Every structure is written in structure tokens, then in C-alpha cells.
Length: 393
Image (cartoon, one colour):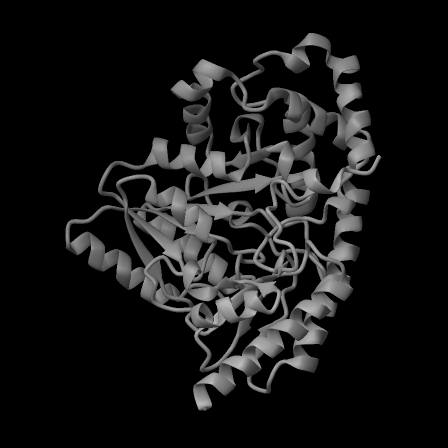
């Protein structure tokens, strides 16, 4: 069944005539509608009314068990049953972590650049946000250590570090093994909680994703947030957290869970049936093949049409290409680009202190097929040329 055009565009808010590379969305044509329809029916047949009840605070056992075994297979470490909980996606888990693990005035350190909407969640609380400068292959760990020491000397309370170490949003970068280990050691030594946003792990295009920080860290140092939003469908609003059992116990006994039971019980049961039916891996491969081709189409178009000096980092996974436009302020370029039918997210939005990214943009390559991505870059090149002419005349 084909989704009516006006319904498919409703949430994405696509603007007529504009190829919006600012949207980190999957292509609706790639979503597994038939498989999820079957899985939903299977969940009701298999689990009956339990599939539509409140559910357990840590989520349905069938999904947790499937995830535990997959994590063991993929990462070499199986979380115990009391070290994992199902969540309503990463945003829900992040908000709950902040509620449970911070107090007003605590310092939340934030990787730079990083996912700008996670920063919005952090800003919803009376926390002090401090940017961590980037290094060559991850955060500048020496600067991070000095920052923690300085904050403590000032009487501040550095409590957590939010980061996206695998296929970073917006850069697509992966931290090196050395950076991962150094951050883990520092966090363990300083009593920091590392909040690892691991949304893109399944979308590795060239080689398997590196081990998660959680899989490498001693208990209590890392809370890893996972999600089916990128590997299955964002509308399911199903994710998970792997963390120390004491933190999972706090999740399970907090007022939110006591009031409402497991988050998104029916969707989680449907996802469990979907995964148990062997549908997950083929769907991930479908995404990988499509997005790999789109990544290549976007990068080829950048190389063919944008001026020399514009540098695009090739992401090994995820949704995004980070493009440097030397000497061209992204925020000033945006209205010109949109007038020519292409949009993007200016790089500065990904720096919580506003100190960086002025000449960078984030381009998403997942929503549109290759011909539209190529057309988008041709339009972007025209916008760049128009901007250069207007500033040289």
C-alpha cells in the first residue's frame, strides 16, 4: 500500500521545491511496513493481552533477551538481565538519566561538535553546559582532564560527559581505540558518568563498528543509549540502555515507571516479535546498501561541483556528511541556498558554546535517492558561487 503523499510529508515538513539535507530522516520507502504489520499481529497472537498492558518497568523480557544476545555477539560482552532496560528511544533515556543522576548546578560536559537536539534536552535542566574541545580522533582528552580538574578546583560539580563516539552526529567520525580507552580511564578516575549516544552503531558502511565505550568500561562508568530509530523505524520510539545494575534499578523504580509501567509496551513487543522472526538483520542490510550508495553519490557530487578547498569528511557510518566551506559563513549562506532549492544545518548549531562550525554544514544523505542528492549539491554549488560573487563585487 502506498502512503498518500500528504501523509508521508506531514512530519518531515518537506517544503515544495526544496531538497532539505538538514533532515536526519530515513527514506519512508525503505521502512519495513509489511514486516512490522506481521510482527504486530504476531505480538498479539503470541502474548495476548500482555502485549497491550502496562508491562514491566524495564521493558518486555523477549526484547531484552534478544538484545542481550545480540550485544554479546556484536560486542563481546553480554549485559546481565539487570544491566539493561528498554526505553522510549534515546531522547527518553537521556532525559531520565539527567533527572536521576544530576542536581541543579551540576556540570554536563558536551563533546564538540555534537548532536544539537541532545543539547536541547540538557538545556531543559538547570545544568551548566561546558564544551569539550575536539582532538584528532575524538575529544581532546588532555584538555578534558584539565577541564575536570579546573572545574573541581572552582568548586563546580562535573557530573557527566555526553558524547556520540561511534559515527558522530554531525561529523560521522569514530573515536579511535586509544581515545575510547583514555576517556574511560579518566571517567573512572574522576567519577564521571559517560553518557554514550550509540544511535548509529548498526549503520556501518565500510567495516564493523568499533566496540562501544560501555563494552570496554568498568561497571558504573558508562551508560550506553541504543535505539531502533535508525536501524528499524523512528516511529517505533523503542530503544534501550545498558548500564550498571544500580543505575538500571533507579530507572526501574523511578516515579515515571511506577506510574506508567514499561515505556511503549506494545511497540516493544512488536519489535521483539520482528527481531525473533529474523527480520532485523535483512532490514539493516537494506539500509546499509541504500545509504552507502547515497553517501557515495553525495560525496561524488561534492567533489565534482563544489570549489576546491571545500572538504567533506567521508563518514564510515551514520546519516551525515560534515562539509567545510572555508571562508563562507554557513548561516549567511543558508538563505541563498534555500532560495535555490536546497537546505542544510549550519555547523555552529552543533557547538553548545557557539564557538565553532561557522564555516561548516551538516548534510544528511538518507532521506533522498542519489539523483536528488546530486541535484541538491548542484544547487548548493550555485549558492556558493552566488555568495562569492556578492562578496567580491
